[in-house]
Amino acid sequence: MAGRLIGWTGAMVLAAILGIVAVLAAPAGEPASGLAHGLLWRNSPLAAVFPLVVQTPEGRDFYLRVEDAETGEAVLAAGITGGQFFRVLVPNGRFVLDFAYGTDWRGEEEGFAPAPNTGALRIDSPLSFGVEGLARKAGHVVTLTEQEGAFTVAAKGQAICQRTRVIHVRPLRPLISPDGDAFYDPDPFSTDRRSLKSRPQPSDFYTTYEYDSWSYVCD
Image 1 (cartoon, one colour):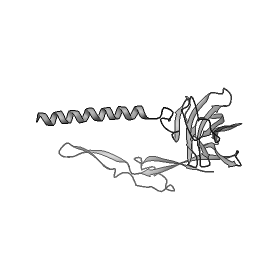
Image 2 (tube, rainbow, N blue to C red):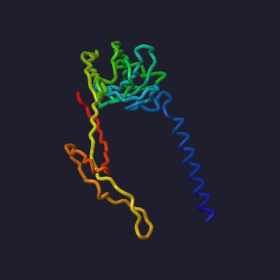
Image 3 (cartoon, rainbow, N blue to C red):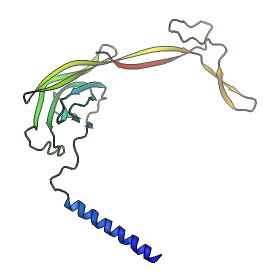
Image 4 (cartoon, rainbow, N blue to C red):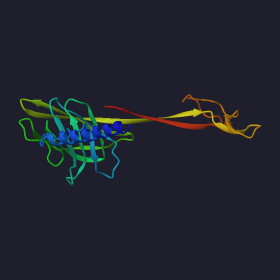
């Protein structure tokens, strides 16, 4: 038994030594990880409810900063893997989009490592995000297209619309069973009417309402 314990302890020590050697042998200049696809951070007290869709070409990663057009402060930052669908919600306001792109991401402080396919792109024309009408959240779709080593930018509007409907339902009334247990049962004095064309009866004073809402892209 003692021999097995000594052998097991020796194996653990050997594994630890090999792990340390492997860490020391790793190349010092190798980045810890690539740029994650998606929202990195957000810095705004306002609710982010307006859509921003960015379409990018394959072959490199993109680092996006959304900056307030008036103050220059960034309200969010995100990573985009080229060619993948990207969508983020931004707050109300006018914003400038600032991109950096490359293939070897070294973190937000260093950015992308210098290389022939590393560069920056800034869209100086502010994009407006806000509410239009009663239930229309207006945003944008931005498309980056690469041609002969240069990027062209195209932007178009996209909005999220919201609809609400009223559902007439048969309410429930609380009852007490002979055993003293509470349960709920449909109220016999109300009519179950789920059609929007039905109107409440004056005598049907037990009728209640439920509201159902949903959002969809309307542009």
